[in-house]
Image 1 (cartoon, rainbow, N blue to C red):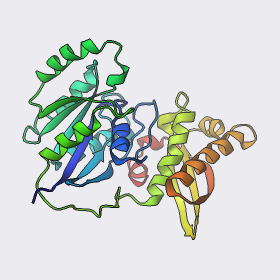
Image 2 (cartoon, one colour):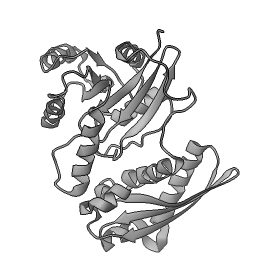
Image 3 (cartoon, helix red, strand yellow):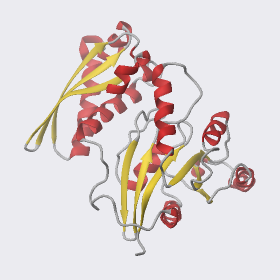
Image 4 (cartoon, rainbow, N blue to C red):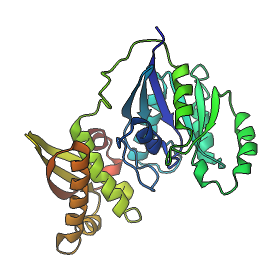
Amino acid sequence: MNYHCGFVTIIGRPNVGKSTLLNRFIGQKLAITSHKPQTTRHSLLGIKTCPNGQILFIDTPGLHQRGKNALNRALNRIARGAIEHTDLVLFILEAGIWTQEDTLVLNTLAHLSNIPCIGVLNKVDQLQNRESLLPYLASIAQRRNWQALIPVSAQVGDQMEVLEQEILALLPLQAALFPEDQVSDRPQRFFAAELLREQLTRRYAKELPYQLAVEIENFQEQGNLYRISAVIWVERAAQKAIIIGHNGLALKATAKAARLEMERFFNCKVHLEVWVRLKSNWTHNEDLIASL
């Protein structure tokens, strides 16, 4: 057998392009993205089936040291938990930059020296001086024992095939674990919630991205029509007013944009109803966070 299959955990600090990398590999949008750090809140499995192997990518929230509430702690637990039983780690860095939060991620891997790790230097297309990449690579090479250091641009697709072949070579020899046409193990209602949260995060990036959560109350399939009912949870009445807007126009615009994204994703018509509800200090409520 010359078929490789295994789990690959994507880690890194917030906003280095982990979800963009996953979407590029899968060839479609699975993970929501925005320019705001910590957009990813869940561990997400993305399945890439190739002629000579199957790569099971696990996208994780960005490891970070800011914030003390229950939501921040939960995001860090999710990211760390995804590393424990993986076959390979992709440590995503922003090319040319090293921060204290990159050090935090590196320290998280310190006790897992038995798990192979590839350093992925993302966003090379944004480097103003490509010559600076060589000394940066040299400095990164000293920080741990890497299986490889590969500069890429997930946004435009540079070097992604090189990275894919490097990943496959490091995975165990075994048969595929999922059907070749499956791209994730998440249910459709999960993606509905994420697509609505993506629109909220993009529209309210400055005002309240971390005080928003989305819950799908109802998801019904009726032939080529999905009927979806969603609740947006906020912490304060002022936040609710911002999302609803004057005469409900802001909420209507957000819901329309989310509905169009859902129709593209599910490839069918979507009837979407959205409500905004108040739950004081929900980001400190571990039970509610676990249910979302």
